[in-house]
Length: 424
Ligand SMILES: [Zn+2]
Ligand SMILES: [Zn+2]
Image (cartoon, rainbow, N blue to C red):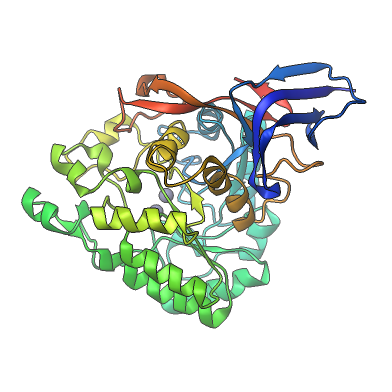
């Protein structure tokens, strides 16, 4: 029997309310459970003294760029980047070329992920054909191909009627529709948040209302359809309040945030660093404070990297020409620690929950995000106090668009088990 025993670690599994120093047992590619097993003899032991042992981390908002943008990232390099960051499972966005809008496209993602043999990859399907917002994609076929959720992502659905039908249709498969809340009439050619900073810098801004108007519409549509809505990268105080109220009213809504929107405000753009050009943009301190409150009170369920690799030759253009986004799989964990654990906003189990069990439930990933017996032996080992300096050049990702070069952070994944196999 191939028995692996991880000893002396602080085992945190929010799915079972576990937070104690204990053993984790693994047999082959499955978890055997947490706790002493006096009758078993391990064929291999990992000493996790001083480490946190938790379910493999899940990043439910990742752009792997393949097919179509292999110069930015491939499924192989993206999943290696994930594993380096302690992330064992990712869900990838459909804004590839061609768009992930049919069964074969979803199956292609599984095939390449299996070939890479690293992190688990779950594809997210497009809501409409070619993400054009006109005609629903083959939702049923995509579900058959293994798509776990649906969105047109940065081509947000302009038609309320299409969005309504998407919610109704996805409900038949119990899949969430992911809302990138942006009224693109209000954000055209904009590069940052609209406010005193954009005025000062003379840059075109995106008003908070561009996000909140669409979010309000989609929450209302979720209400009348009974469909499941998941709000991507919430960035404004008004959005947090809309989601909080919708949850209280029983609307089936969940939400996520990125650490960037917790660590920075629109002042970060003062240095004209294109790596801080995000969509949705970095907002104001009042928005940051509201997001943190929403994370603490459970309005925001999950934390994500929104990993958006962009090849250097595309990113170094002028601020107004540069595409949006940060490469983020290898910095998600330390940035979340910095934004939430170090200042005392979240305890470790609460952070781990938003990186494991909550995203697993939002995407209905059976057997993921938990250390329950019988599930996949995906485990992340975290050294919670290890200081280290971010070196963008050392990333496994193909891309380098990251504003954190040289920053010292605390906490790092020291290794993962993927289906019981150790990756350090
Ligand atoms: Zn987005
Ligand atoms: Zn994204």
